[in-house]
Length: 308
Image (cartoon, rainbow, N blue to C red):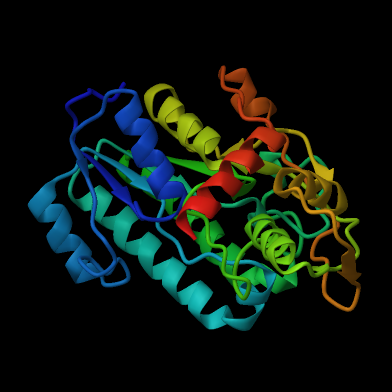
């Protein structure tokens, strides 16, 4: 169990995941939380990260720092995605070991699983087949982070745990149409189309199936596992329920109250046909999600309206 007075470093605290982790930690009574903006600490520079760990000596680390994006961004900036994520991970994981961090939580991604993975995807499916080409550099970096945590646990006796979250959304998401994920992009498209009385144009066929987890549920799971799970086995975190992109668009349409036309651009890529996580392992530990898709999308839309 993490003591309520323990010094906790949340890397990437301004992002979608990191901000949710800070909110959750504060909500359940942790108050000694250390953060740094990217301007204050460049996590790709290991000497700077080492100096930070030496000065601050955090007892626990939540690694929510990563370069992330949707299909277009992953496919367009392949070098940036593999370089930035590898460097961030190496800096944080290695220095957590060097400076005696009691426990570290590393966040992977459901994209680490093979493109043609059996559904729902189990933790043991990792490295059993080729990856989805459009986000392969990001996935390879995340797999390296998983294996690095496991290797340090094995050789040095560290306590580094790894979570594989499904598709995430919520407050502080990226709503940029060029490099955001499908759900925030959809929310923005429906909102702007409503304001301008125009049709909504969405990528692909609408048939791929996706699972979505509100980021506050992930933060809840992260704090739960930091207090209750010690082990090198990876853990999927999701809802265990998926829907088609078309079905998702109908929820967004309802929440935004958009009454116009929706046009599907089938010339654009769909990505993987289905991505659903098997969550039996984390469910067996006693955790389950609490936020429904409609409630979560409504909360996210309200945040977008108030912060855009």
